[in-house]
Image (cartoon, rainbow, N blue to C red; front, top):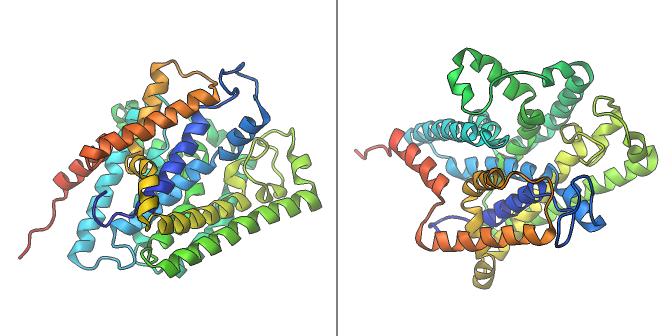
Length: 379
C-alpha cells in the first residue's frame, strides 16, 4: 500500500468493480447458465437489476474523490504546484481517452466520459465542500430534465453515426461531432448524468477524510440520504402508482413521475432524481464506513484483497472486456462462474500488488503523466 493512500476508498472502488462485473457477466443460473432470454432465479434477477447503472454511478463519483485527492485533498494545492497538478490531470484525461478508444475495439467503454469529466471538474477544484454539495444538488434536476427533454423531443440525437474505437483517430474531420455527441448523449447521457456525481465526489474528497468525526458524519448522513431516497420512491409508488404507470411503456414515452423512480428495467437511469440522490447517499455511507474499518489492523488484512483490486480497477475494467471478447462474449453466465471470476480477480490483485505498486494500466498512465509533466525542479 503506497504511503498516504486511504485503503477504504480502494475497497469501495473494488465494490464498484464487482458491480460492473455483475452487470456485464449477467447471471441467470446458479451453477449453469440458462437460456439467454431467461431471467433465472428471482434472487439473481434482483441482483442483476439492482446493480444496473449503480456500479458505474459509484465509479463516476469516485472519480471526483480521486481528483480532489490529486489536487490536495482537504488542503488544495497552491501556486506552482497547482499548475503542475492541473497539467497532470489534463494529461491523465487525454491518456484515459486514448485507452478508452482501445477498449472500444472490444466493447463500449465509458472511460472516455470519465476523462472528460475530470477536465470538466478542474474549474471547481478551488471551491469549498459545502459549495460543491450545493452545486451537485442544483445540477440534479437540471441534468435529469435535460435527459427527459432529449428523449421526448430529440430522439434523433441518439442515432448518430460517428466513428468509434481507434477509427476516431483516423477521422479528425469527425472529432467535433464525436465530442458533441459524447457530451450531449454519449453512452446514454453518461456525461450529463455524471455531473452531480463527480461534483459530490469532489466535495467528499475535499473533506478531512482522515478525521474519525468526519467519517462518522459521512456514514450517518449518507445512510439517511440513501434511506430518504428509498422512502421517497416507495411513497411515490404508493401515492402515484409509478411502477404500474411505467410498466410496459416504451423508453421514449416519458412522464414526469420518471424522476421519482429508481433506475431499473422500466425507467431510464439518467432521468431519475431519486436514483442520483440515492447513489450519493450510498457512496457517502460506504466511504465513511470503510474508511473507519480500514483504520483497524485486522480489517486492513481482511479487506486487503478488495483494496488490492481497487487500486488497479482500470486494469481489471479493460481486462474483463478483453476476456469477454476472447471467449465470444456470452450473453449469460452462472453464479458459480461469476464467483470464480471475482475470486481470480482478488487473488491475482493480491499477488500482483505483493511485488508491484500499481496495476499495468495504472503504471502506464502514471509513466505517461510523469514523463510529460515531470516534477518541478527545486530552486
